[in-house]
Length: 252
Image: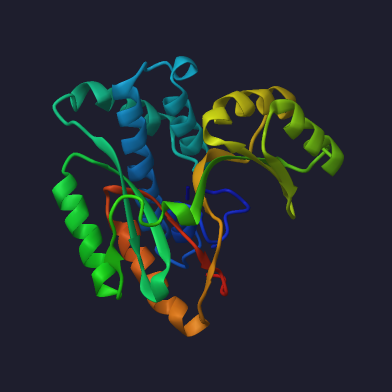
């Protein structure tokens, strides 16, 4: 999702945090928006499970993302404590599917206490840009729901990374410019992640994502409208992550 990860790219399929991180200017506003979304995830994770991250994988992952984003420790603690204060708010994790301009497939993950408000907001944004909100299952077949684990190439060769991936029980391992990326089944994510951490100690990023299995090409001119749509989705506080299958042809 979105954080000061050195290899955040405006590539198809990444969560919306990655997309907004590369915008020029407005850095304070962007940082505040990222912190707000991570804080909500921390609060909900703590509310639904233990407040001890060691026994609550969802909370542990949220805190790791917060640290990657350089969120102050006080902010993290406040978000955890807020789970006691906001007991009357019942947040739901809801997934919306739809299409953007040029029939680009979208999966939008949200945390909301008002699903009618959230659905209405998403529908309005998509329609404004020539898209539409679809029904459940309308776009998921364009993606693979999988676990992603990334760690630095430093001191770990390609062969060692592949061996580590196989021994951990992952599906695949690819080597990119500055890091190795291990891809796992969603249900194996935490098991594989724990095995990898025991060997490499520090991860660049880990999370469950919707990775596109095919891509739609658009021109640089068409990308402007698509980027505007993504930015409007990013601005919605209820939206946590946005995944799409647009093939990147530009770098923001």
